[in-house]
Image 1 (cartoon, rainbow, N blue to C red):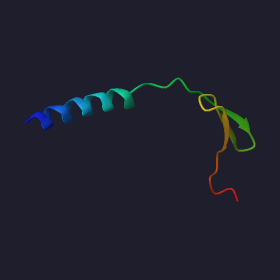
Image 2 (cartoon, one colour):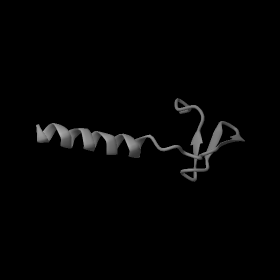
Image 3 (tube, helix red, strand yellow):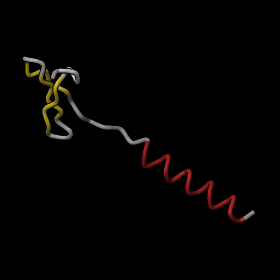
Length: 50
């Protein structure tokens, strides 16, 4: 019974950490490039570009 209580507590903490909100913004840089301000990276809009 005690293991069951610990698993519920662990699940509650895991859910709390995963369910946070992000303040990222995506900017279209043109030419198929997207900038992600949260990760500070530029992505290709088309994953099949090559």
